[in-house]
Length: 621
Image (cartoon, rainbow, N blue to C red; front, side, top):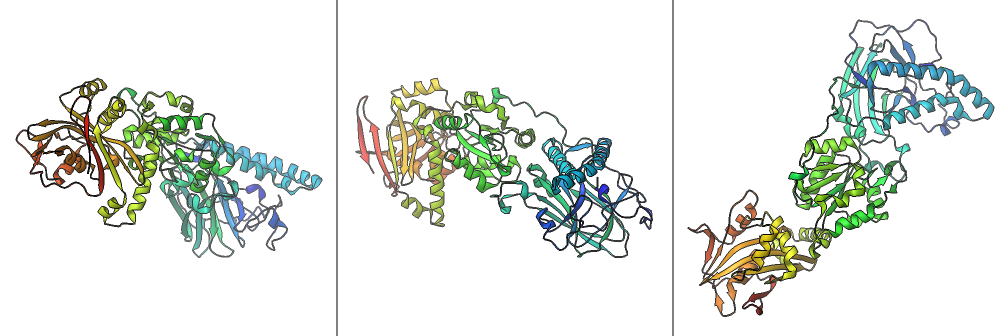
């Protein structure tokens, strides 16, 4: 709808179309937008008393169109009329935006009711302005229309979106008229500390309207970020000429042209019975971790969130956030609330949440099927589950019971409690590696890597269980044992059981490896070997093999590794190939002539071998 009630010109001799045309009639649904005259340099109401261009219209706002907006019924359109405008200097046609879609007939009823209310309120407002000497009363109908728009914006069904923005106009002049279409976030409604580069970028489009009928539909994808971010936004049309542009607008609407636009259908229920234990949780921020929308004003941390973060962190569950927000302000608030230290690889941007969740999984180096996503907005949950059906998406109401979720039991081992610290140390390592360029070995030498290889102890059981159940890429046998099987293996006196711990100058990696081996005459047979991906590329495998085969007074002639190829252990296969192992007739991978093998010279290895039931021998490379 348009501000026809502010028109003050003649009601006769309307402009007429020069030729017949077919008006746009393809909208099944549309949003209710109120189009009015605005100034491209507006600073109302302060500018009313300071600007030389100020000219009052009936509600004492600035007149930027010649006589206002005229309802011209000579121009056919889907609404039954055209909105005729003659622009003055700095004039633009603008609407406060919302994308709440209604059926066409419902929008017409709403527009008729709003127009009737304006005609009643206008004289009342002018009277109150005169009595109270407050100019704001004179444009009370304009203020109420903005309130209505804000209500509609907040009530938008997030599962339904427009197809596009329809611009239909008629140029009754003999010359082309160039307009700039803009869609933008209304920064005056936001936290003043938020800068433009922290918001979705505005959308601009140049439109050349030649004499006669003009129709263009701007696809929703072009301005999706502005709509889906949920922030107050505006839509504007301004002529590039200083003044004098004359147009008749027929349709300016966000429309749905199909009845099946983003239908509200539930996602496929997530099957917890088939789900793996979760290794990480990705949280939304606004109205999830805190109440309120940060970019619009103050927020308050929800009760129990900090305690939840501490508990998940203690269990070794990784925590991240995915939020459509201003990054600097969001990180500042996370720090202020005491949450930032628990958050790894935050994704704060205006892109799809599914992309952010995908990137978090990649940064964690874990499978998407081991992530849980918590979000208040049903649209965002739907978008994630449709793009990433293996991710379990939960509503914000689940926060109060999330620590009891059966997939988030985690672990209480020392390594689990330090998992977040290990990831932060890994980030420091990656940053330091950049300074060495392509000389990776020089970087490794600078890391001062230390490895301890020793027999397993009873107190190692929980961490060994984690390694053998969760390691896939560097799992040489491809097996994942049940807990009762692990207990039996550790009590079997016929094999040697080793654990590997590792550290460098950045910090400790904790226990990273478990190896099951047996000495058979002149060779060492590695029955099972699982190594955490945290030390991938650090040559820990080579240090272990050297340790197993080079003992005091004895060096093995052969080392045989039980390797079984799986869909996920290609990395282990590549390690053996790089170290010169070859496939033997019995299916194992073997290397011989080990007497001249040198230790990895940049890893300081402290080694211990079992030689009896209650004694061991130590050795340092």
